Length: 139
Image (tube, rainbow, N blue to C red):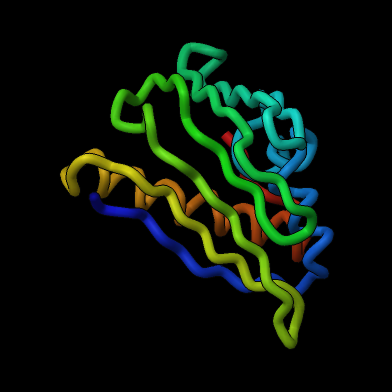
């Protein structure tokens, strides 16, 4: 199964990066401004796009502050996402934090997969802008 992976470095402490990824308030500043997320293992998340017409629903399967958060996608407007796993792993770096991002479990590498790969790159760049400059570009 193909996986989407990205590596980003942020010039901020790991705790700050974790809060931006693991909380609804944080997510609203770089991914989607319409989000709910319970920041604990077993918690639920809902990320809405296009006025709530497009929704991803996740279960938080791992929450280890400030090192790692993982979600299983249980429902999605993109059928290709259902049953996939999204993992944000944060490590200290000489200049702040290193993020290893993985979205795993796609059935095939096709045009949709290419779109998702690009989309995550854009949103993770938005996360970097939010963390380092105070202004991301959420949907």
